[in-house]
Image (spheres, rainbow, N blue to C red):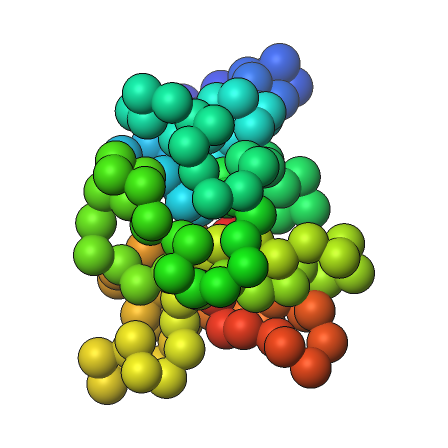
Length: 149
């Protein structure tokens, strides 16, 4: 039996780049929800709104989240999904501080009341996206539990 052909470095690098690109884009390709979609710029977020300026706060593409994460500013939970067409599913969203940015933003929720008896990570994997996990927004005393990559 002949020995297998060695894989060229170019093939390895190309394969890795393709796999990385698929992983990065993966959470935004399912079309399930605008908040949490993969992005590079805020202008790419909420594409189906007739008037993106109608959001209850400025749109953001969070670059601190792997692959980008579409969201927008908010003051309360009611500001998330407040505009027709903003949310495409019934996934609960919460408004919370994001790390040390000083911004309050909308996120897909994985807080206790929203879990349907699941643990946070399982909830995020099953309802938000398989690449998402449940973590804190990291904004001090007002932290929220949210689904992010």
